[in-house]
Image 1 (tube, rainbow, N blue to C red):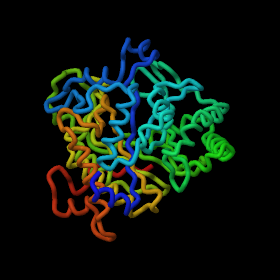
Image 2: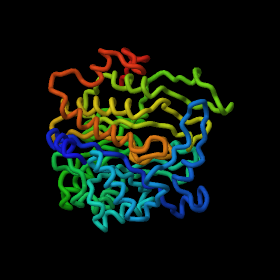
Image 3: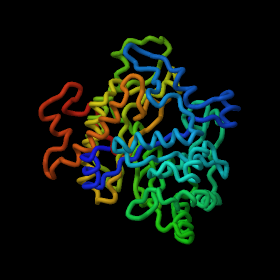
Length: 393
């Protein structure tokens, strides 16, 4: 990390946290469901372009096709992230009524103390399905949440919550739930978790609900804040009719990333606490070849503007210790959402990340935000008004 970037982050207290997927090593369950040796690379490498100009497949650059069973891979990821201003990782935590999946990299990291890099956890509490959509069809392993699970999962999480690297907000351990709406009684869950954390010496929890399917005001169920999770909640106009298909059977949805960014930033703020999230791109045709969702024209420049605008808003709206923003994601290769270098752009998205964070710290209070400046002077790819009405939830 450059001295200027380090000084910028220190002066503002801004913390950028990237979601991290651990499905880059084989496990017996995936061997049974998908075939021996399956990892997320299996999905990513099978992707093909669906229309003219469609960027697929997304293939790794300098990191290669890594295996997360190797501790040196976790070290390399953390080193690269820190170099470009990413504060920490939010690892997905897969827990199904007492059964954990994909836990090996997490436990290796926890037990070894390496890498020495901040982290937090997001309980990915949805079904695993053959369609990769978390729905109730073709279920591989189900999330059947029960009230008696509340204590069990929190006790399972305690070793992580006690880790000195674990990310805290106002001194409280940060814990995210991906689908709060599938919990039988979210308020009871929050109450039980807080009681156990206090009794076990962890202290207070900072409970966040990912803004996915059923999320509203978190205080109504005893949670503290919401974490945005785009592309959930996308409001923008599809551009599929303007594209030249390469595969006649493709029925997916395509958005213009540039327009989406303006539409997303044009929404009214919520009345409850929200931590924003940006993504460097999104394209899940690797998982759902004929009906995936694609954000076309995603570039480091547009991503950098979105991140800078989001960072400035976070600095202006949040007290210092709550200045969190999230990036979706560090390594979602089969969903076309990765800061990790690929063969097409190398480290450009990482450079855009560090530059955006540094610029945001130097934006004077009361001055136009980055997006306001762009819209005043006009810029190719950005319209002055959203194509659709802002989302109201």
